[in-house]
Image (cartoon, rainbow, N blue to C red; front, side, top):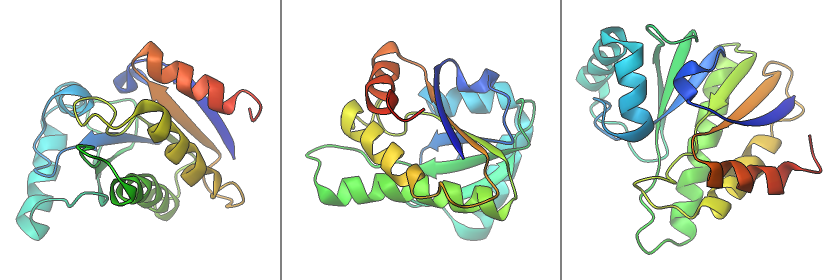
Length: 172
């Protein structure tokens, strides 16, 4: 499995799965979530509404799958990252769960490529370097599985990109 990182708008990235840093309502919001819902179109919102009707909201650290609508992907995995506030090991574990649950769904859906945004580093204020470290460490545990061939960390902001560059410079 290859791990890459790019600076881009995740809604323009072609992958089997694009991951959405969603809120627990699954009904769209700001940042990555809003962009995915806007560019993906009404099919994503309708799919999220069906999930809500069936199970209620999506808990922090959990993940669900919908169509990708108009996005250059087959599926969107919506995962709810933790709000940092005062931080702590619980928040770190919840962020790890986001990446782990998304990867498990990617494997279940037999997807070869998955693109992740920087989960929780925007309005949820998770420290960028710590979040990138958790993301890379969690994804690296999947290097020996045979289904997902490429993971792309898609950084919207230059600061996030620089974190991944520092952390992955000797690994890619």
